[in-house]
Image (cartoon, rainbow, N blue to C red; front, side, top):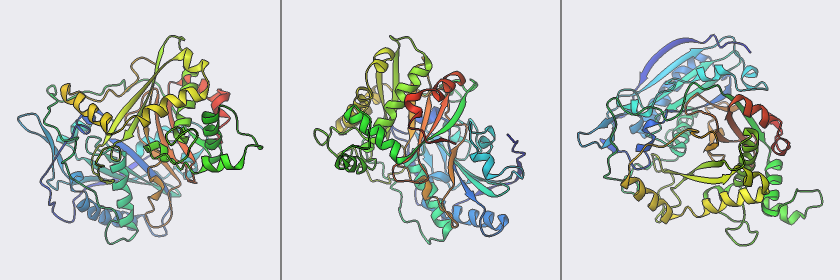
Length: 465
């Protein structure tokens, strides 16, 4: 595998092209726990633009400045008041913009089969930076890296300021302006009159919190690709308890095809027994992953395993939050099962457990979670503390491939080193869309080897990139 031989060409601060109308933006119940998480690092691989790289840098700087004027909190800094409340001071302090050249790296090097190369981590800045550092560091950064035959645009954003929904809203808007739009098509909502607004205070030790997981453990990272057809087969097996065959009734297949990931966010539209009975495509995939990783870890049958899923709460509340509410609006759903029982039962059993917990996460559940946190403010416990946990992040519904900067859709989506540990999984949409999924899987080396040899999941993997 070639080394990146990356060279930093320039670094500057990009300021919003207009002064912020917002003075402060208070961190919410969903934001504050993320202060111990590292900055989000996600980026897109693109072919070379039909103009010079120097011109691209100029265009990106100009469009980033315009985009920041629509997202003023990202150009601000965190401030903690004497009473302990934390907010974003929208002071137009700007964000970092880095230009890097890696003259030995090609698109093929990034997409070649095997583990995700370590040099991909160099496409991002603020490596291993905790979100609490936003008190004295920019809340976001963009790095553009020139390759032999392409470019990589990496975006890094403070996780206490955005969740995945808001992150990709900003990234999509940045691409939209670069492509030539005079204004963004979807404006963020900065309202804070929500259930997540709180008077509770989380007290931090001097210097702030520390990361909640070991950052030096050996890990392997791979992208597992699941085609639309493979996902449908998994969904059929999860719902009906048998494999999909050529003789399967086409009407049943049609119902499965109509899922379109709506059940991921509780918007079920298909039926098996009743309107909430259908196990979704994503729940089916998650259940299979839970089973296969648990088997690969060779745990004792009595060992309790955990599959933790992050859910978007915007539409779960009554009344609903705005779709483009800016900030974190997520909660974590932990699912538990003894290793022996998880593997002894069929896929339907695990998938149904995930499904029931997702469906049950309604307005009342969200509000109970907020009230529980306010009674005992705490940081988000990111990590695999018992060697038997899996944390699913990101979403195949995020519009990652909408990041067309003017000369075509991305070739791939990749992430940095942030918030990765044994058992951290991130779901991306497949590039071909139409219900395909890429799972970014991070595991201990021995566990990854066992997973690669697990026939139950590998029969659904059409390729490993």
